[in-house]
Image 1 (cartoon, helix red, strand yellow):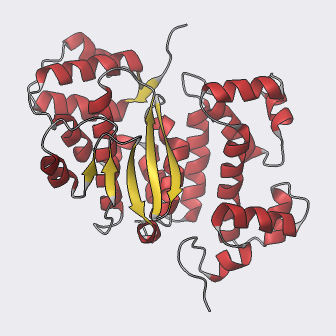
Image 2 (image 1 turned 135 degrees about the vertical axis):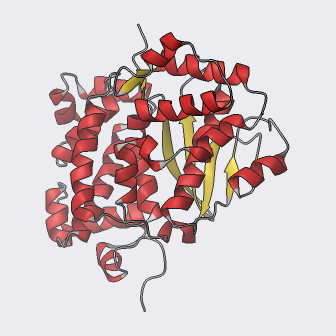
Length: 330
């Protein structure tokens, strides 16, 4: 079966521009192919990265590409991130909508003792080390820009060995860097998640989510998880069997399709219900109204679920100014 995965054209153009600045000779046929639509087939992106890796002598060239990426290269995802209230909110949004940038990699937020780790999980096979470095360099620099320079990463983690002096990585990223780790990611201390962002307002954020959901559902690879996310947002009370029916498959078949994408229906649904709950509470709805809308049996059941997701009850979340991190008011 032909691979139908693809990458946002604007992000690809950022890589193309960097390649040209480094003197990489990109064939005119490939340049033309990269400019033919809103998305670029992964095979063409692979070819561009191969040319870049073969022609550049600087071992940190790929990392520099990531640190040079501007918000506009991420298209609607950048606007969605910027309209979030806090950096923590933006990380959750990134995990959901990263496939719009490129659907052969995804992010996940994993809590640890000191905060969270934003893990990066690529599925591509060409120039993996270079592309991981570019992606995480982009995350660190974009987070710093969105917080007006306040963001400080605890460390950046790579599964591969260093391709240059570690000090050179740290100078470019502005934070500690660790190699030969069990996963790729950015480790973030808990207080960093509360940094406020350049905000465009909740109304615009909600509108952008509608557009982003439509883009996710229309991705060329037709990912099942993207379609499931859209259906859950539209019908949060639906369970696995009803979602599967809407997609023309049984609940068991839906589980298998999601497992192929390394996603579980329960985890996906709970993450989306949590996000919908946060948005609704911030929008002024009561816990009872939100619980009913999301399909909980009563307000107490919703409160227990919200506490499990966030570590706070809905009442505590409201009292603390709609923030998850930080102590409750006395």
